[in-house]
Image (cartoon, rainbow, N blue to C red; front, side, top):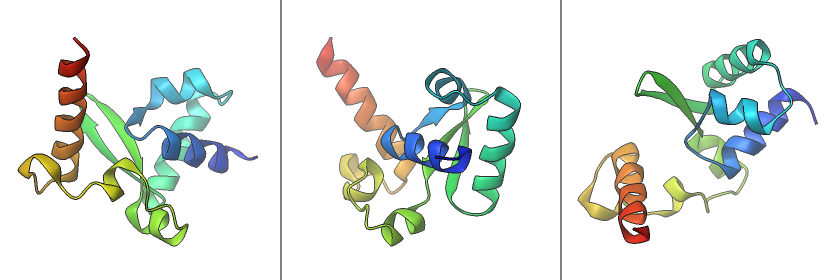
Length: 102
């Protein structure tokens, strides 16, 4: 498996991961990760958003649909919590899970 496949597989299985998580769970160097993530985002395989001074990554919706992977958290959830924004919806879902765990 090459770096592109490794990164996409990890992001698909762990949406919202950042560079630190990728570096911990793959054997890819930081410079190589940074370069590959930028290329994947530019080419539309991933989308990223900045939060708290760092980028977090998600599989592109169009790529997930093409691969028949419409079961991801963002894709399969019909905007719960009254949100129109997928990132806000994901944050609210994580916050609800954290509150229920305490």
